[in-house]
Length: 200
Image 1 (cartoon, rainbow, N blue to C red):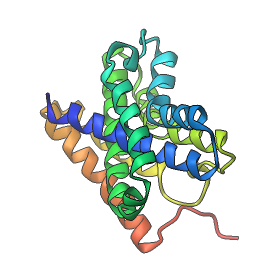
Image 2 (cartoon, rainbow, N blue to C red):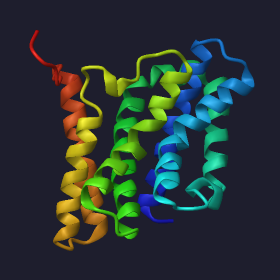
Image 3 (cartoon, one colour):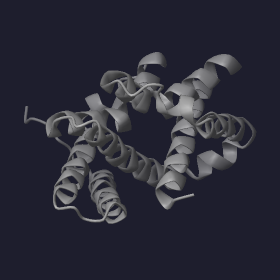
């Protein structure tokens, strides 16, 4: 198992837990909670694959993603209080997750010979649209529509990845650098209250 694949599964787990905890807070039943966890974890990648014609979509070819989402569902129910105490750590894993999903989404689109702007957009879709679906289904304003820096961090990391790929830097190194860019932008934007907002 490569470290990129391991991080991909870890990011999927964290996203699934995020969705399940949100559904629990909203008093969803067991089935509804599982559905929210599932769409949060794999929604972005599924939308990307459907839009670019990558069939069958990723999680249909690799059942490990189904197992990981199920694990996130069980952990959230049986260890909810413990997980809530790890919210800061969850934020860090979530940030690594969106960074990795962005780069993997871009890499997938580049393999389909799509244009650079399309690859960049699809990379961001891979990273954030699972959360958008979660928020819409649970009656929340999606995070990307708030002033908090989120999707823009993915755009920045995605641009870095595309530039490094253009110069044929070793892929693992390109992914690592891109993840670091997204992580640092996201981390410091939250820590220092940075926001992209027009002056009123």
